[in-house]
Image 1 (cartoon, rainbow, N blue to C red):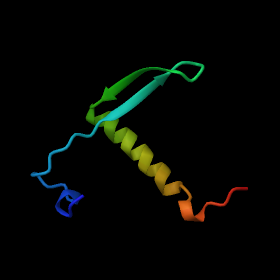
Image 2: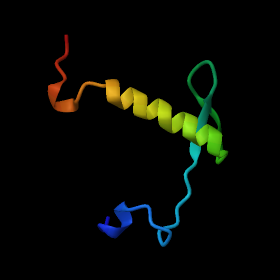
Image 3: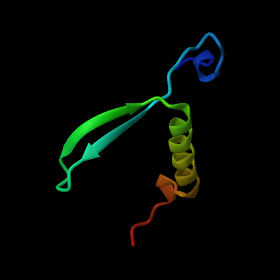
Image 4: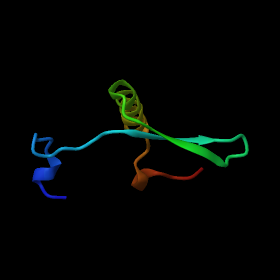
Amino acid sequence: MSATSRLALPGNNFWLSVLFNHLAGDGTMTSEEVVTDPAMVELCASAFAAAQERATQHEKYQPV
């Protein structure tokens, strides 16, 4: 990725969406749903960011 593409400039158009995989009780996938609602995308992005902040870095992980 170019240095320019790392910046959210008006010249770099992109879509943010969430893909939900719907699963049956046995774990088989039943359908997919693409969600582009900004509030839902923000909710999912903030939840992912919160999890990442609390996660153990890969190089520091020690199985117990």
